[in-house]
Image (tube, rainbow, N blue to C red; front, side):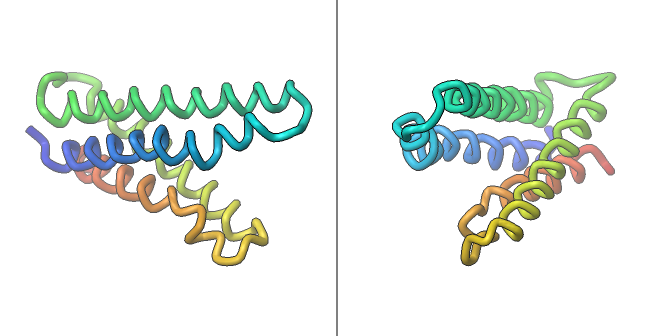
Length: 128
């Protein structure tokens, strides 16, 4: 059992729950109800669910590896891949929030905090 990876998995699980609970209510439903071209609207709908899929798969993977259910060759590479993805997500979120013109955007678009924590605990668990 790797507690760093377990913690990363639980933070990822909380992020996933937040994505569905808050993201659906505060982003997806208003965006789907807005009046703009249906093609970009449908693309954004798909993107929401692409993110959903990644969040679910990375959460399950972290929890399986952290608990020792999935172990062996390649797990460090998989954890590293997940961690790097979350680092990149955080960098983009911070950059876009900081340049958005939204007052206190870095705090209003706060998902980067969870992404950094998931990446940090994943890297620690992978021994990197």
